[in-house]
Figure 1 (cartoon, rainbow, N blue to C red):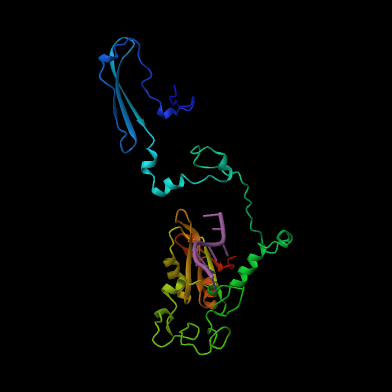
Figure 2: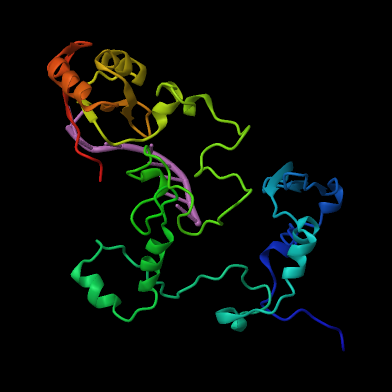
Length: 293
DNA sequence: TATGAGCGG
């Protein structure tokens, strides 16, 4: 009386004792005791027990099981703390500890970007405050070279090779001690060799993108490298960039590439000389490239 | 087979 008992049907299978399969016969006292080894660090638990089988022979039974790692001992302090948090949302109706993970059935609408200025966008976004963000973003795009707003990034400035804006233009303090790139190198400021007056545009500068005078080369053999293309095309004049399209996954050449010439005439020459030229067993196709979208 | 990668304030 008054003894606390576990509620019926609330027994967890994992806590069940495994020796509820007593063999009738009552000879079990003749057997060595049951041994439990582990669980070890990998959660492997071994149970060695002895029984009489149906023919009355003594048999040894070894059971190896993987047990769940004992929870709180391995949890961080923070994780233990989290367990006492109040449940919220749909989970308030859940029993404590009944579920660690909730599956959200909430519907999440994802906006599909649409071509700018398409009819659908115009009508759908009318009066939608979120739609204004895109326009605000355009205003944030201010070229640091020519200061034009909403047209291009600094790296794409059509005037990037021309003189930078002079002092006295917008937003500049009249007499500033602060060295600026816009007003040319200040005394003693480091200027990379590639940017010193008279420096030739080669090597490292080739990475710099310039879509002008871009020549597309197709039907390249798969082992053509950018260096090979450069060798081949540089004979016509200074080359500002060489690119061989590679497969993102395999790293293999996709068989085409681009060569940018500093001077348009050199591109013309290259096209007229190299288009149809046999290179590595293949006939090259060389033509002006369409600007990339 | 065939028109490049990535970086933003």
